[in-house]
Length: 280
Image (cartoon, rainbow, N blue to C red; front, side, top):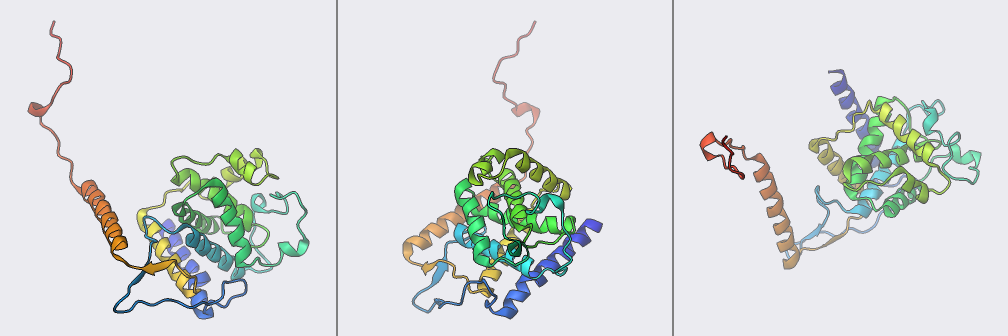
């Protein structure tokens, strides 16, 4: 019961943190992409994007989670008195060799800086858009369970730890921690292992993401994109695209129907033995 109340509180905090704030701001926050013209469907032409809940668009998903991280940082409630954890502090565990200016540890990063950092990790490690959604789930779960704040001094290590964990949980061929040391060449394996271990401990090893939670995050991110006028790659729905979407829908429906069918048990008289029994 306590965990369910905690998750409900997390949903309310997340909505108040960036969803409603983005709607009120109308996409004019500092560091957020400016407004642009939007195509609209008409009687003769229908515009749709290829992003679906089962196959999200990678670039736009990364933009959306970067924007969500940006709002978590800029709208933190304990500004000036942040709740921090030592393992996530970049001042104590830097991931870049060059010294970080003190003002950068106190000034909120803009959305583009966050996007470039996340995009670099995803492109170098060849991660999927689904992994990006799981990354945001783990970040918000960490903030809730550990009761900490996302701020300029810790957001990179929080994002890095979440990506490492999400790639291992979601992708069949996970990226090893040593591979991230090749991407971030100023880091070392021992630090990456400790970061992952402490991240798991803060989550109480709760890394399960139900399909309902995944779907809610996907549609919330789409709402966030529309609220901030992030253009989704829409194109006219011509005949070939319609047939391709219909084929994908049929394949997915067949999988759902096959998984929902009850499995019938065989009776003894229908058992088939591959090898004849040897009677002594």
